[in-house]
Length: 336
Image (cartoon, rainbow, N blue to C red):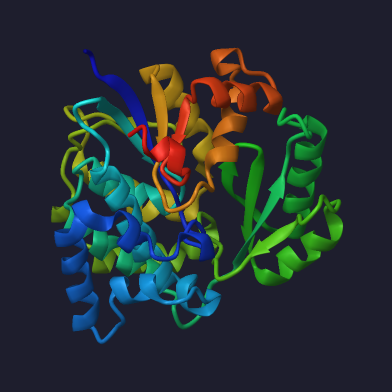
């Protein structure tokens, strides 16, 4: 029996929530050694271990701040990756959304699991005393998940006038980054759509020029020797493929610590490239949670992948033989 070819997608910040508490206890059996090592690193710095954090009742002020959320999410994604049945599935490419890029580096063996933890801990802790700017999320699709070009044009115009930036292109959403004052102006300008526009708590202006100082600090703190050629093809936040044979580790480091820190992370293009270049049998979303389920579905619709043209098409397809498998959905997790 031939293996099914899968593209693996790693989630970013905001994916560890009240619903994903106690992740280690439920799913962490295969990653005990790695989690133990991470716990020791944190305790050695006088911080609460990830295991204790994960077992505590969820508190936004504790679990969503960068120095805790980043490595919690990394550990959960690692647990899920190690849970994939390698006898049934072949991972043909890995990508991530925002912080998920760092996780993808580790899972593709571009950096080691340990260096992945250190990288994520470093990048996630740099603004623990003073966040630079903020992020806001806003939908740009119609109810059927088809992109609304008029809404997009309005959003881009208002973002420009406010002096803000497009931080992440996230399927049927844009994440906007900028000074908090600029986002507060925007929140009064953009038409209200249910809970949107929504300022994302405990997030800085990731993937914008405001983080130039963070990029400069990262080059001083991260050793270039940790970067290697990937063992599994990587797709970055521009849709560029980093292949195992032709990639230059220094170029990967430059992109990781410079370009993606200060420029738009185009998750939409990343997924589109993965679909068209690797034509996977399935797309696998690592946990925690299922925050990327909607955006990935919207990207499938935008590209008319599998003939899908609406939210209803996607939902019906998922009910029969799901193309997108999420570790955050128990019935789908059992398939892996």
